[in-house]
Image 1 (cartoon, rainbow over the protein chains, first blue to last red):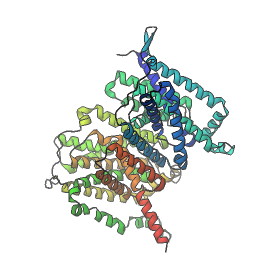
Image 2: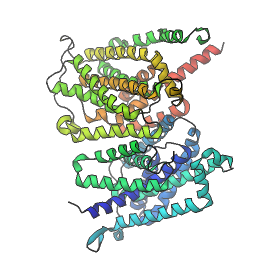
Image 3: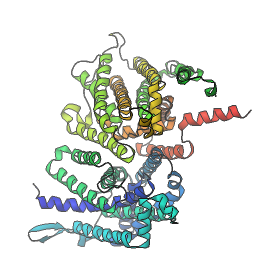
Image 4: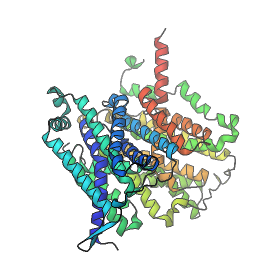
Length: 286
Length: 329
């Protein structure tokens, strides 16, 4: 029986990953009401970029992370320009279908290039093992994950709360038409936010693979988790996404450790109850 | 168009109910597999049951605007009800069909209270969650459902104790087609009734319907229960004709597939699901040599293409063409 503390620690590390992968979707959904089910394909892309650079080109793990971010950001901005922007005023159904089509294509492409087996991930030695502190064991990689995600969260909150760009994003999330009326170029803003969100997902994917593995079904498996985080946290709310990701990470870990027979039932139940209780999410305004 | 010459709403509905030549031709064409492709009757029976499933989704999505990513839950309840009845020693198909429909309908009625309260992203998430929840539950309860291996030992008795389910699928296709046709008649009647019109009103503007006196929630509950019942019957037909049920019957993949079929055919037209199911399943059968992973590559491209260039599906494209052809001279 694992200790409560161990479950909490693993759950928080897992929640940080979920937060990185879902925060971009939350902001873009809140801003444009665009249901982007392909968001986890960007995370998968980041994961594959990291794996390829490490295994085939021998790059160090840390050097691959910015590349994973940039590759996912570039892909998301291309997709946004070519496909998504035509669908901002389309029905939710059409948005869902378009993006699920992209998910299918991305999964098949990954399977074609890499096969359906899980990709091996070799972490550098200094990220492996664990350190003891006050009689408790901390896995180094999970500590690293939590630290990285916290750093990114702080950067994100600062840039959203106290920069000009952040103010524009908040205005556009709050009331898109009013923001347009005030002369904010919402289309451009959205493209930048979209790229940032996609890049964060790519980074999240690159960091996630050492903990949860990587195969072509990643884009669909984690899509469900990310959707849960976004729907529970509330659209466009960074704080809400953070809380929801931590809740989901801890309750998923707790479920897997303590009642493995239930599988993911616990998670789905938690999600449904949360959505029924607060249809607009924990911190949602609409 | 004839709308200008119609006197009142009842005349309009009556005009809608009239059978068109293209519809009669469609149903005659469903008999063709008996003559033209007797080797493909097994496939044809699966197409018919899937088409019935797509029709049930069309009732809620095409006519009422309820996007469901978990519709396979009701299909699965129906399939497992029919399959379990058979393994417990009652393989009579028609009563099995009825009970499967009742079970799925009851489950649909219970869940419809949740469904009716939500729209937009919350609704998508709730339907997705319901589907996943049931899938996980069925997986955990493998002592009943057989888990990933599926139910063992399903045997369907002959229909009317006379027509045995043969290897070539004559009985299976006749049975599936008959069920499909009867339920299609029912669905057609529902859609072209005042209730059906109210549903379309909900699809177009859910806020305004209560203002003109249409009970929003109870209408949604009713059509959702009907759609769940039909989905359960479709599942039962598939279980009885193939004599297998596995977890795949209520998985997310099936929910996504049926959505693709309906979109491909065209929503809100009753025939869209039928045509989409036929095109999709025949294409998948033709490309069955392909790795399923690659099959989904083409499905993905198809989805993107349909949404970008053919937003109303095959039927929408066809009706656009005929309208243009009529307008041309």
